[in-house]
Image (tube, rainbow, N blue to C red):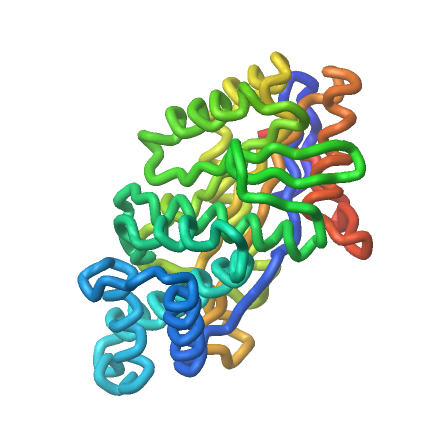
Length: 310
């Protein structure tokens, strides 16, 4: 996204450099499946072989053992890689709750409904996955973080941040999900933040071919900014009424880096939608809280946080 003149009536739009990348090899799928099976067993949660999660794990394990079975069909081969990669994401997210007092109740949610990366059916499992991924990210910032109402709370030097997490499954349900998230924050004391997951707006089993992480980042920025632009007026109204401090959107896509000999990588991009400075002290707090939650001191607001009107 290129810098553009700020429209004083518009919120500020910031994009962050890629948060993480992970390569997915056949051995990674095996490791992820082993970790998940051990964690579920230790928490006393049985994995029904007919559940979506158990079937996904079995498919990925079968592919990891014999990748040549799918190698004759490029679509099936890529689909199998993406499924294995997704399980790696699930395992990483679950690592953040390992040994927690309420670990079992969160793992149970991951068994409910579709969890396949190609599915666009709303499910408690995918909703919970987004919560756990964001929770793990905040834990890496060494913040005092809990999985509690509205979905996540995190302590910062500037007060408690209350985060409602919503996964957007389609453009048609986006507005209702945004409204639900804001209503969910109504009873929260402290800073109110809405987190959206946009993964399911991408075509099923799709990916990005890019020369670098920066190029892939631009693809994700453009996709998300185009989507959120249609909701700009309502979001700004939430800011104006101080029902929302800021909005963070997350999108993760499989990426093949042309210049690197990696089988597949996952790239996550975060986007921050901020209130207009004209709102005074309320809008001044938004960058401070965002900084405390999502940025390390070494990359504090790096890349100049592009100012751009949507």
